[in-house]
Image (cartoon, rainbow, N blue to C red; front, side, top):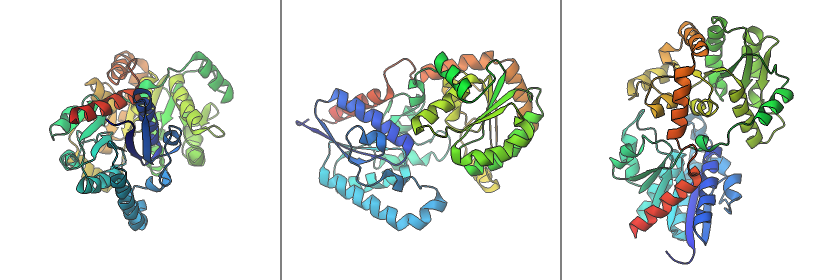
Length: 392
């Protein structure tokens, strides 16, 4: 490689910005002279990136949001690809946001021989397996968050490196953090506690709220102290949904108001660590609960049409990441039609009374995701450099 390594890196949302910032810090540590171009948020900018345009423009990626902005996004895709080809970097690293990133990679490959690396494998093990083959047309190497993903990518001819999951790299919650949390939120320190995580979208809270309320009311743990971590703009909806029935006087909504984004995210993890048991919507939250060693029940539903489509396309019998990583089915899961209050209530009572089996697998999950090992950003940087050397 020449004197200065040139890296073009693109992220489209805050989670990608966080991965990108850690990866760039890793590359800067390993390579004496590296220059960055691309698109990213505050964490990538802190590592020396001058973002070509605000990353927030790419965060609107749902179908409903995308249609009005489609022409603008198409222009941004073309502009970005042209900037990559003009820069002729050693490597283009795209992070998640496949609707934008893979379209850029396609144009870059059509107009140059720049090496392409995509960070965060598509969930081809769960549904739409054909995405890996399509991705292989434009991506040379994939950086995977889960240890079971490389074979799916390698089967389509891409190099794939498991680099660890960022949740496993979070520092453990300390006693001081728990004490400060209790004080700040006026929580009963010694009380048995249930944490409810009904999702971070308005539509999820509206769809799951009633089911969660009914399930908890039906359990023998309905008298426990209740914590609900949420975001400031969702507080009123959470109050309306949960306060009248199951939260009572001993319920606390933890919304992170007045805290920075990083502090609020940490506060949410502390709330999970404080609790004895959790009822949560599906998603990365199961890994956060695993990191906090809080046994859980997962429940999720979607609208009727999505439910019909996804139930026909689903390739696995579980969508809970702890179950997939631990290769068990230790976390009770109620998805789609199974998302009913009575079975959720039974599973919640049982999990609260006998958490031992689940706790053991939560530890297995964190170990398999790289806890205690080298930081994911540094592992990702090593994988990128190894891919470049292999190419030469």
